[in-house]
Length: 283
Image (cartoon, rainbow, N blue to C red; front, side, top):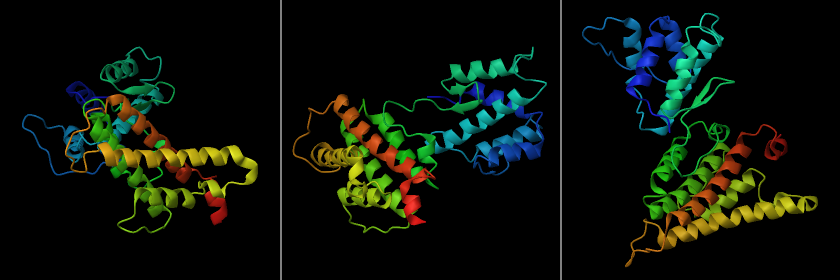
């Protein structure tokens, strides 16, 4: 996973030193970064560096969502360098190449064709595409579960199992809320999963007889979510037990996390898809 090392931050600061304040504001605010209080430093009279420190002061780079916002800012800077005729692709000063080298060495994924910068792998847990996450106005709860999964699959597989179940539950609730549907406070996960699939037209019964294979696939998609819930009830950390289930290994956690990932990915990408069947039936 990409790390915002002092070198990366210094390189970003140096790059913005010659950037007008209004462009610095647009660069950070377009990515959802808020301006913080004054961050004056002795022996540093640069107004532009102080402006950048004010924005950075509002970020918690240990939080996945904030880290992704700043990675997107790095990508925007790289794209600007790429498009600038004075520091473009083949320029002798090598600015673009230095950016690519530093970002990649510090763990970021960089797409040279677009200049997009991503954090890279967040761990061995679940990962969802940006398209899926962008389906929600505030995917913070999903980001939180993904971060915990990345931290726990190998070190605490029982926690990963519990978190995988929580990821499914949060995704179902987010989908229902996005569709204007209500759910009871005490709703169980299978009921939430059913309701979420139905509101997106992904319930097996909503598929025509001609698409029997798709119907079977959707039915098989529901079954693992039940298994995740049942496994969490037997080995998860949320219920007191007389004995610790020592048989749970990282390989079991990866199986559970993979099942949760597949379901959540389909749900959120369907929610985001402008041509999804549920949109046609709604109109």
